[in-house]
Amino acid sequence: MAEYVEAIGRRKEASARVRIYPGTGEIVVNDKPVDDYFGRALDQMILRQPLALTGTEATLNVSVKVHGGGDSGQAAAVRLGIARALVEQDANLRPVLKAAGFLTRDARAKERKKPGLKRARKAPQYTKR
Image (cartoon, rainbow, N blue to C red; front, side, top):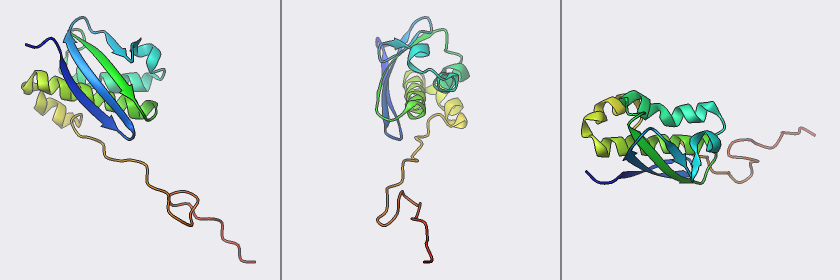
């Protein structure tokens, strides 16, 4: 087996390059421990989901480089990257991860602003007189 397995995950404007190694369960995001990089417990829980589902939390180290987007977009990008890396490492995990929806790229993104509107759909207030 190779030294590590690499995969890319994306969500909104965020892009994450994920590497998984055999190890003790350490997760490092942009050279910081995951607890320091992602302050919200929800974001930490989201990116740990594929590892928890497959029972590989304590046997794999995860190294992530992520940029772009906000906190929740980055967390979801990391989750997709981890899931893809796990499948690349062990193809038998694919049905489990696919059923949980962790291998699907969430294509929702910000809608573009339209001319004559304040935002994508918000119109200026109507004035009768």
